[in-house]
Image (cartoon, rainbow, N blue to C red; front, side, top):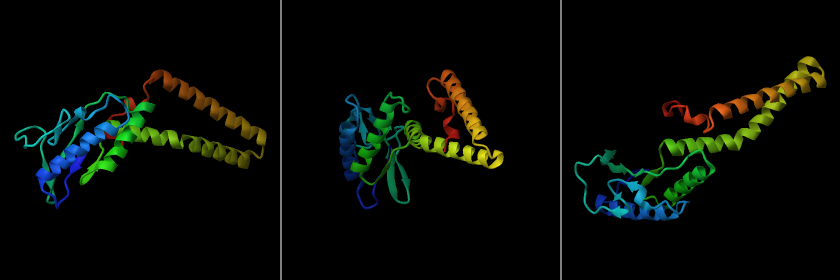
Length: 185
């Protein structure tokens, strides 16, 4: 989670506000075993607020346009493409929106995959319907026969079914696991 402090607030005050917000986020996120102890940043470590700056740590503060910020890392083992992982990601994003102190955003490989997978699953039926309509329309226009058009549609469904079965056998965890994160938008 990227944490950016508002420009008008003192860093010490914001640090305490951000820590309290992260603790509330840890309580509200979907799953009983997820707690604020999974967060690690300059603001919170192991669910406890840091009152002093941890100088020299690898959890650095950064400054941009007169504002300071840090990153809260989350170490939580969960498959972001599973239904439970998608629910957890949405829950985390909602909780961050409800409790942010400044400009906060959820970023990372897991949330990115989860969001993309959810969108693909949401729009896939529309893609199938559009493909069927397009193939049927083009086929009817060129062959002037409904029978040949339905035959072409049957061949298309057969090829898609075989492709889906083969990809499920070859990539049982999903296709996203073989695509490097740098290739995703």
